[in-house]
Length: 213
Ligand code: ADP
Ligand code: ZN
Image (cartoon, rainbow, N blue to C red):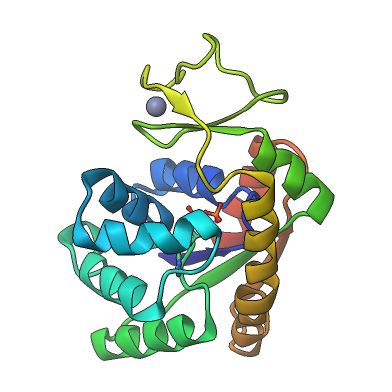
């Protein structure tokens, strides 16, 4: 099973793809996570990517396309994978389609998580992320058991540098302009499925599972 999770920043792609990964035993591939790991490791790629990420801009297409091409040929991807945060531009979607065709593969479904802007702003500005495992919490709606500590792994929680108001607004703008057109791209290919991303994550996950299996 090969899935793409579409949806704006804060729509819950990360949360839902973690749940899918556990349920179906296929890896979640998040370009955001891969890029953040490179930033943390201080690699050349990380240094280059950080400049774009901190401003809420997209990292250049050729960089992320290259990352994805390397990742989907790993042995753990044989039974499928969940793409979270890729593709994010039409160019990325076209390249992915081309690469998969060469491999004799195709995407099964593209899930669009729909959440209104007001809710996205609340979610992102209060978000706290585990530095260690990427688990997500929220200042008011989903507090960890111990303040500042991840429930899942005990790692420290932090506010992502791009989760500040100014950068959030920029990321939402970039989403509308660059990524939202992918809905039409995948609708034309009969792959687009829409889910209302408001409500409990378990309810959304149940709907998602019904849609893909
Ligand atoms: P979110 O969806 O909450 O904005 P991500 O972790 O998916 O967060 O992405 C964080 C940042 O990483 C993006 O704002 C962008 O700078 C960069 N990034 C991630 N995926 C891509 C991609 N496919 N193309 C370009 N840039 C990307
Ligand atoms: Zn953690």
